[in-house]
Structures are given as C-alpha cells and as structure tokens.
Image (cartoon, rainbow, N blue to C red; front, side):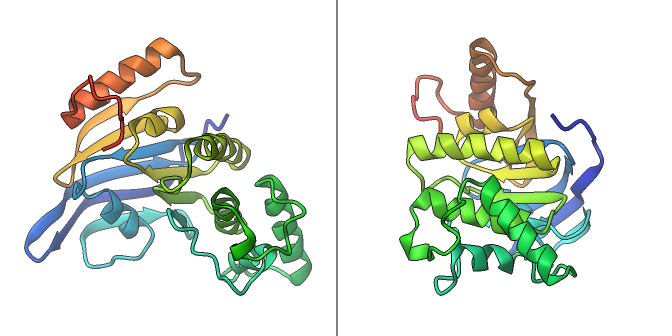
Length: 243
C-alpha cells in the first residue's frame, strides 16, 4: 500500500462563482500521492467544479492550485475516439509525453494488460461493453504515469456487478502506481469502499471530513455510513445510499 504523502494536487482558498452564485467558497483541498480522496455532496455543492479546476478545465477562479505534473481525468462517459482501436485510444494518452516510439508501444501494451484487456487491442469502442470502455479510459489516463488521477463519477453508468469489479481494478492500479486520486461520486458506499478520506461539500466548502482506515470491516463501514448520512442530512432508513 502506498505510504508517501507528497502532494499530487491541491486547492488553496479557491473561490468560484457562476452568474453571481458562489459555487466554491474559499475551498482548501489536498490530494496526497498514495491516497484516495472522495468528494460527496448534494447536486450543486461544488464537487465537479473543484475537479474541473484541478484538471485545468476551469481557469476563472480565485485562489491557487498546485498540481504535480499533468493530471489525468476519467469521466462517467469513457469519451473514447470511436474511429480508433483500444490500443490507439490508449496511445492517445501519450500525446503530451516526450518518449520514443518503442517506449510508447511498450507502455500501451503494459497498460492494456494491467486493465485486463489483453487480446482486445484491435477492438473498436462500439465493440466494447461499458466496463471495457471504462477500462480503456483508465488505461489511457494512466499510460502517461500521472501523479494525480481525477475521477468524475467514472462508474455511475455501470451495473452493480461491473461497478464492483471496477472498484477492485481501481484499487489494484492505485496500489501499483502509488498515485493520488480524487473521486467525485454520489454513492456513499462507493466512497467508503475506495477512499482514505471522504469530504462532504456543502455550498462550496468542506462541511465534514471522514477518515477511513484500511482494511474495512462491517462495523467500521456501518459507522462511516451513518456518519456520512448525518453530514449529508440523509435519513438512515433510506436504503439507497446515493445522493
């Protein structure tokens, strides 16, 4: 398990407004290398805005950002280029990396193998299942060896069994590469299953922080679930732990 706490990405006193409405309110957020940080919050709480600022997709904000290198982003929609094969889509992730052709080929092959798609290098996105498409998207994100991986509800469109498989894959990749991960999710149980820290955003600020030790056990999971439900103002009797 990764142990280093070198910052992979951070926001300091970040503010963001849209049409006079405050979306981020002096937000402080740090994602160390070797940690998974999850953001929970109701719609409009600022989760995706924070991720977009870290990704460099939104520059109209106050405060400062710190990124160790170029971050990689995976969205709910795999956003693969439909006219390119799995291998070509993964290779696209190396466009900004100054390495030779042989090194690119080796990295692409390694990442395809790591995400469990060996033998599917020549398949096109239209021939892939939803889970295979997200595996390709993860490989494309990680092939450039980023320090920071930003995930915006990457498993939200998958069925429950595929989502569980993808959770296991993500944790294997995280352990192997030792990167920092920011996960934006509406699923409380997903946050508990994956994250070392879960931050609840409310009106653009951190309203609650939940630290989760590994490994999880049943009692611990139940405690964290109740704590997060309280922080989100969600009734404990609700069996759907998405928000």
